[in-house]
Image (cartoon, rainbow, N blue to C red):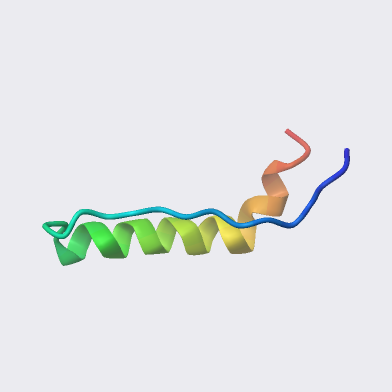
Amino acid sequence: MMMKPGFTRFNLPYFTNDDEIEYVLNAVQFIATEGWKFLPL
């Protein structure tokens, strides 16, 4: 399997509350640090 580095962009509406923003950022951080473990699946 060939993997290429890349980027993505996501937008949040201005009315998103702080708890939702924190949840999304924690999820992105989790995938960034632990995502490699899911590649063999």
